[in-house]
Length: 110
Image (cartoon, rainbow, N blue to C red):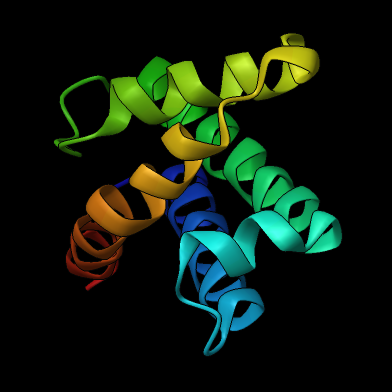
């Protein structure tokens, strides 16, 4: 695996860890919605994750990450459609895709 790809995988892992740290014990949607700074921080980490996944895709599209296209698309919506961010989609991504993504990234970094 190319060194550049490993760097992007490391960045993704760091962003996932940051999201988990930001959420702490606030693992419910209402707490997430009540904290604007938390939402903005999580959105920024998803921007980083999506950008890194996009760069990996350009270097080697054969690297298998199950939710890659969905997260790249969400990153584009967060950046270019800041006024149309759907917090339920972001929360759903946190709950449904982030745990799997974390495992996949850890396996690729081994």
